[in-house]
Each structure stands twice: as structure tokens, then as C-alpha cells.
Image 1 (tube, rainbow, N blue to C red):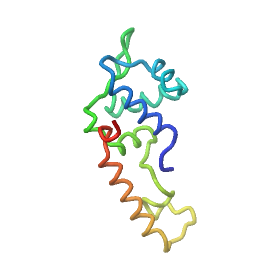
Image 2 (cartoon, helix red, strand yellow):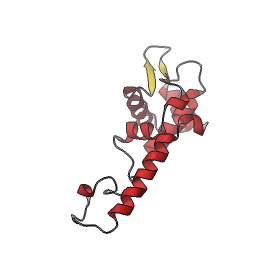
Image 3 (cartoon, rainbow, N blue to C red):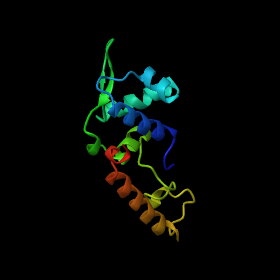
Length: 131
């Protein structure tokens, strides 16, 4: 799982929310971006739990960014919505995760190097880079 629809929705939502001056409601955002409201609401809640968004309750409630755009990495967003680091293959982060239970996999060193580069790239890339 490198990036799923949840990551895509999270990034698109964060870009829209970054342009708002007042809290953005999940239903309005879902309609604006043509996303399923219940799925988007869960994504926004996960982002709020991680401090990426601030959540406000009540009639004028909704979501605002929790930090500046340049302080939110894409890796952090993906971890928040996916519940784990994005991985190229099941085993790319750790040989212990090999689905084939091979103790000396010939391609794991390559997969691991690729995974480290992707993690570093996503950690260096911020929401500011997307807007």
C-alpha cells in the first residue's frame, strides 16, 4: 500500500481547508470535493486526533489546520489516515514482514533502500509544496 484513496482525500481536503478563514464543515467539504461524507468525516477525525487539524463543535464548527502548511509533512498525513507508514511492498520496511517467510531474501535490501528513499521524500515534502 503506497497511497490509498484515503490519503488522496486527506491531501485534497487539507489543501481546501488551508484556504479557509473559518472552520470548514465536513459535509460542505465532501460536497465540494465530491467525496463520500462518512468516509471523509473519518479521515478528518483522524487528522484532528494527530493535531494536523483543529476540530470545532457547534453550529459554526468544522475544521481548520492545526499548524502551518510548511509544518505538516505528507508522510505525517499518510500515517494519520492509513494508520501506518506507506509501503512499497509488505516487507519493504522489515524483513520480518516477508509474506514468503524467506530468511535470506535476495531483493529485500533493494526494497528496503527504496522504502527509505520514499519515506524520506514524503517526510521532506510538506503541504506547502502542494499549494
